[in-house]
Image (cartoon, rainbow, N blue to C red; front, side):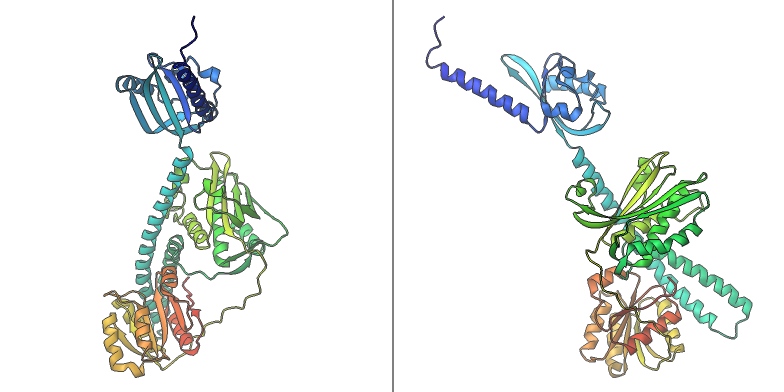
Length: 529
């Protein structure tokens, strides 16, 4: 045979080079690629990425029909898709479940094209692994849901706090009445206890929604846990064995000690419930961990840095996937009616988020669960902080401008302050308060106001307006939305005292007296919580 004409040789070399380049791309692609015979659906080639992703060898796939290989979970769908592909020449799935040889589920984008090679029809399937992306999307959707639930919980708690404030004020005023018989007072004290119990529930809702003011201080977690152990051992049943594991190195965090104790207590009680009726082993572990950027691939809330990991592990019944998805929702519980409020783990979630951390949970049915609470670690031991001053309940004679749109609360606050000797001027809105100020500006010593009022005016705006004409004016602000106010309205400033709802008359009078007597940045105490 004569050698190829000169004009053909460049074309042959180009075709050979093209095949080499295609093969290199095929082998190096970071997506899975399958080549099928178009008439039968038999696999004629598979690239290394696909083989690694699904755990098969090339020999296990070659010559097999696509729908007869185990990685297509829905065989009928695969056969129908192949028929459609033969007819239309193109098919695409945005989200298709595949199954690796070891049984692990993979989520993929699947695109197939029909085309000719050397006058033969072939099908190329491009398979992109989106498992990690789907996992992140699911976690993001869960985080969004928890945020919405948190906002709803905070709104409900705020409204309940207004009701409870009026209730507790009236009860404390009645209990101070010496003319009431002891039997009546006994009933009133029972009502007061129930109201305080309700206040505890709203506080847990606010903790979940991260709308509760917390007192952050440098805290050695080892010491907090060690002090808590004796109480926990008395609290837990005798068939639960409690073990505490922590190194000798101090674990410093910036936290509210009472809230951290509540987190540990709630987790331990939850673990005990999971081990009913046989009991089991409960382990508390605390250690310093350094997380890298890979941590956020597993949990969207995680981030690189130095953290203290507080882990509570039980040998109980474990949880299924459906329970894990709803675990931190307020009022969600797997317990029978009357065996819990469903707020224990929601409170753990809210407190941890308020402290700049997150919670991770692993569980296996029949083998137990582990809750890991991650909190930002302090890199060095802090200086000892001084204790907060104690409020004293004293009488006064100053004039107070009281602004609150809730009539029941305004009436009770006014009455309570008057009983302690104060002169009270009342206003139901910001505009009413401006009119009262114009009439009595020189007489008013303190502005007591709710944060938000009808007409869009806030307590902060009122205070700034009035302070321009009287520099010595003091202010107490009260609301059920604690954290939101502190962060967005700048309450932690010199001369500002915050009184969280609900409160009783003694807390009210003590906070007002403290504000009038001191010029520091303080928060009111609340004996109801």
